Image (tube, rainbow, N blue to C red; front, side):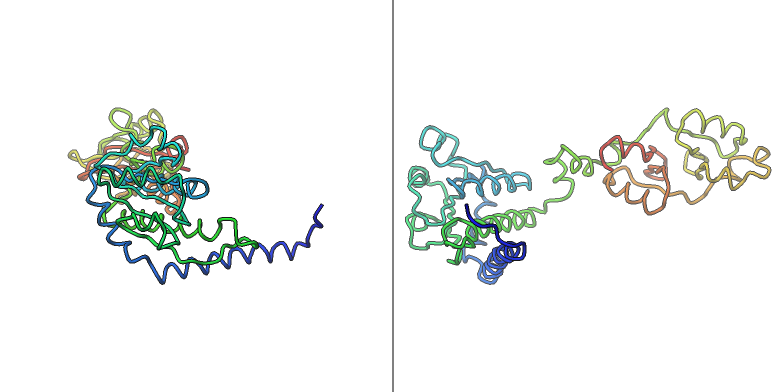
Length: 321
């Protein structure tokens, strides 16, 4: 059994890997592939999808690249190189563009995919560190990676090369987002699940509206205001005048006006400058406002008219918090 090294030696080995890979990324940043922009422009012209293909470690990286492209507005999916030779080539159409990954550029399992792109004139983008390889000679767009040492001490395990490939795929996906004008609303469409999906929801999707809102007229006596506040349970009353928002009465306003409260009317107690939010605001932004203002309820207003109420508990139930 190999002798265990000290903690300092283990950390030194780990830092060496990170240093090698970080240096490689800086090298790639300073020497981007000449075909990067032409490849991106060709993807923008494609009516179909970006078909990403690879095998082994390149396949694992390819799956992530395809997933990132698909989730950021560029239709894409991954095809396993070996499965492609056994029927999955039927997934690739003449309307698509192929992105093939092989560090050596000589991966035999990619042969049938290369032939398929040539047979049906399907544009081919290749990622490889070997510019003279079979794959790169067949490619229409060559995304050549710098030939740099792997971080593995034997120089054999794919480490630096896979990091560079993944980073280049991210760069391509994000650049496509920029060109497409991909917005946060689009991001929410492709990420409906989990906390991220909840944060991408709009205020209008979460707010209470209609008969559940605690409306009172600005002339209403405070006894009526208290009844409405208790009945609706939001801790506020929405004070209206001539069909428009006049102000809001909160539990805090009640405490600040305890002297002679029951002899007052809604107009005298109401806060004329309540915190409001538009219905198309992201839920995450609404939560940030609650935290910043240290309040528990938001009034949703559109065209000077209250259309909804959001309580801090709604953010909790919706998974935003």
